[in-house]
Image (tube, rainbow, N blue to C red):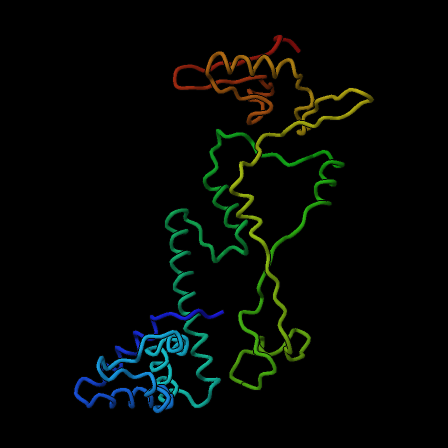
Length: 295
């Protein structure tokens, strides 16, 4: 819905004032009316001879629902550069495209400068985010695991929705006979002309998700056996790890203040063919931890 505003009316009065500077009072209004193709007699009803301006009221504010300056500039372009309205509409759309191109170029330059990632080489936002995550990943952070247990993995995948959205045609001309346009803009892959366009809008699922704290480490699987639950590692390679050893290592980490690398934090440290239950490395010392110390 359009709401009246004095902005465009004030703009109209400024244009009239410039035109009228060396003319009799209504001459500027007459030229202005001719430029905008408005009936002069109609405009004269709202002319104030004393102020030499169009009266400020709601009817006139509603009447000037677009910018007079932009209208005059657009009309001049049409008269000088266009043969048909289609020519003008092409330019009208290209104005938006130029603004968008400038925005995308600055957006891409920012990613290149900040993250050294060329977004034009990626197909989606998740692809860009993945590349940045891999490039900036701290090797001292918790490992990121998939889910190896088939029944859990399949259950999660069954409830996933959405996916990659691609735009294969940057332009589609409906029922066009303009031979200068690319063939892909006029014909579908089956050789038939485009007759309609269907557009879908998708929610910002990925940006929303990436704002949340994401889990790391292999995680735990609570498996029910009759009335009891058993805690099992989601990483099968660590299936031998006992909860007793995890509790001991957690207590050591809490009491010493050192970060301990273990089965659920970056995986067990391997020395030769042996794996340590826990491993600490800092500026002053290196500590190997083995629960109960025997195999």
